[in-house]
Image (cartoon, rainbow, N blue to C red; front, side):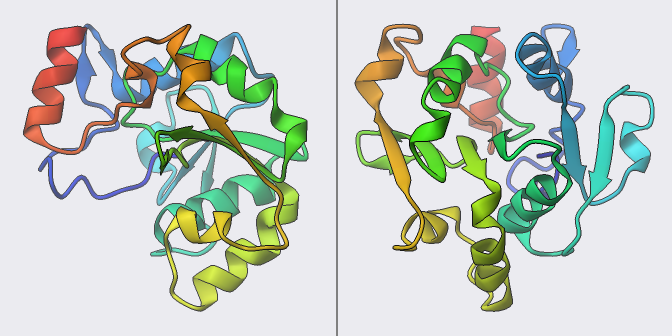
Length: 188
């Protein structure tokens, strides 16, 4: 998902360079070996014309992450999608594989890092589409609200599962502030 306004950071995170690669390219690199179909969901196709990946525009503009997830699920060729944010420069194929390995266990398969859900490192089923639309129509834009819908089967993956392959849990790190950017640059 490549939306967002980058208000707290003050610059476009999608093409922010870290270690010679943009944040977007870092996510795409993590995806390349895992997925046959990769979609970029964005507010406009223009900035992504040269990326070489299918870009779809938000079906419901202004609906934040929920709108992006709705759009991605709508256009996806598969019944389930793995969704991550463009500002996750340390996204690890190994941690993605841990989520994918449990993809059939729920309508939402989501990491739970000591009580904090990671909705942008999760698998979602197309079963979620009407519930996403309903939340958007009610102006409820938090993905955690989707996980609270009783009709959806939510499988939470505990932090301990990920620590074996990513002890510092960097795969879940995203850049929101200048301090986050400095930390990412230090790691990379």
